[in-house]
Length: 109
Figure 1 (spheres, rainbow, N blue to C red):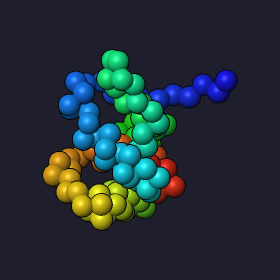
Figure 2 (cartoon, rainbow, N blue to C red):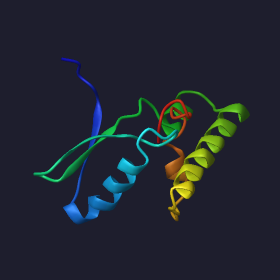
Figure 3 (cartoon, rainbow, N blue to C red):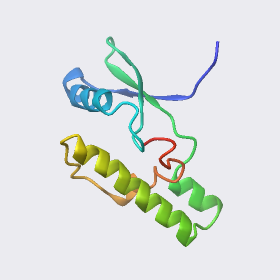
Figure 4 (cartoon, rainbow, N blue to C red):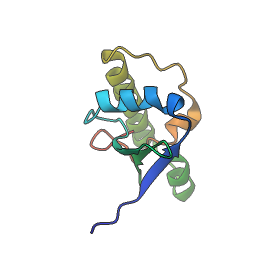
């Protein structure tokens, strides 16, 4: 049995319904963190775990211009996926960008 590190996100069912619907709709899209599974009781989503993020990576080494451009392009590609699916993301904060260094579009948000 293969052990895998995941994120388990728990909240009241009505709060997770929209996120679950969106992740199911965007399954397999580039730059989007993937939904692996869901649990009914207690209500939670099992999400793909990313090995690194920009905050910890920038603590380990200074990010150069190429790294920053890579992150910016990944964010824009993820936003494009959202927009093409008919969604608008209204909360793009610097903290959200910290999740993107590992991401690339061969991986996911």
